Image (cartoon, rainbow over all chains, first blue to last red):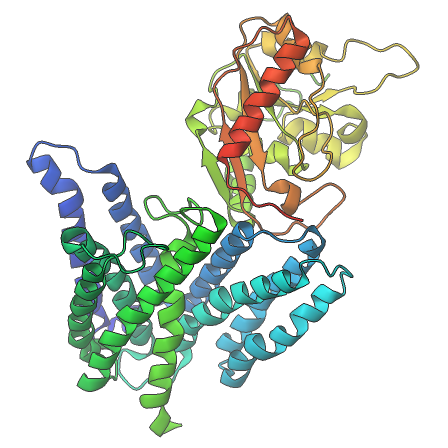
Length: 314
Length: 224
């Protein structure tokens, strides 16, 4: 377990600890010093961050297999939430079991490092086979809706999120290895979520997508982007093989992609008439609410480094 | 006799352990729970808790909402003709679930008072769980409530009747299916029903209305 702390991972974990302590100071200590009680919403949100960060760091540090299993569990919880949220056809109840079986299949390719199968199974084979299985129910009403919502959910929660796990089996180009890459994309994405939120709360004026997410502003988006770009450039050499220019491009790209994920899932929730995907995480909502941006940044980050950083070595 | 306080003679920690170690983790990982107003559940008896019925797992879901320290005093009503036959099912129903077996049907014209075991439990200060639909029925459709609930409430004036709306199991494990599909389950607990059980139709209607109102608070997922 301790050998995974090498190559700067320990330093970045220390930085995460510092962020959590500062956040707790703001949510709990500062209000108390001023003789007021803090916002219960903010307090539970920060406490949930401790739990989530703790579980994630523990899983990643124990070893590659546990790290992959942890991401697999995230996929399962996210898919379960998605299928609970999106209305299904009663006739497809048994098909849902097959949809769930896509998770062990996809993560088998991660465990065994079969990149070709990892990249082709869901977008091609299941894309072709799932509608066939739906056809076998014999019910054609809402067939198109069923096949598209099921495949879309699989792509987001299993294929896209699964890229996080595949980072762990990439050959190491930096002493921090796959753990460093995983830590990097998760930290940058989650930091950007918070930075866009804080920046929007502080300076927000001009609404950016008023019909879908009225709380989001240009000031929040751009403020978060600048803060995240700085973080992305600073920690890149500590835990990743990225050079300065690659880190800068990713520092600008990931916040934008994270924002796209966030508002895309907002549109889904608005369509379904819910505020949060579930109430699993106090102050945050459901798993889908927490990983909405990560489902989009994970594959973009993965394929960026797979092409530009790993490309010359393949 | 099923109406003894501790019918199995099992140690009192067995049921809380069974729920803490097996039922709760299985429900949480296998399905996921969304709960509203859990603090409204009674922690002391006597009390009657009523819920809509979709699946066999309703009883486990409802029981798992209670505190472990309360669990020993919670007694769900179960149909004797279904769960009381023999063997493992009967043993689990009576001893691990702590259910009270109720005779639903007339046997040859005359039968003993079917509500007597529930009355006895209330008199011992226990919390009785009832599914007044009497059957699981169509998935996620509430059937009309039977009048047994009003009879019981009238006999025990002053015992609070707490409505609970359950949702999700009608899709995750509907009647006639054996393989559960992982989908979130939801429960909403209401305030005690304020209606006079001496007027049976009005009382039953008030409980039905309370559960329908709670059901409207839960996330909707209309299947077709």
